[in-house]
Image (cartoon, rainbow, N blue to C red; front, side):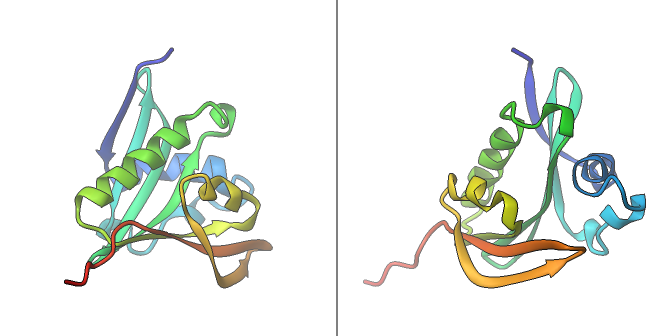
Length: 143
């Protein structure tokens, strides 16, 4: 079993993983987000090698995660699951009420395993179908 470590990383470190996992056939610059410098970026290392990345952005008590990617040769080995669980715990500790993402429709059932719910918002980009998914983390209690 490899030694796993999850830590906050510089956004530039996410680009190679994003490109390899999401858009390997496109220009490298397509994986760079205009607001990358505004987000927080986390990486999962297995035996000191970066295997999976995720970027989070917040507005108040709502967080969005973007560009969640795991290197193709190690997909299905649980690295992404560990990283997403870490992010859910992290944003919950920040007092987040809602975590959401633009999920590829082809992997929406993966996010449902974590409690994410599909919304009625969907779109197509670069011939890929997306659906907005949300995870309610806390609710305001009424006294």
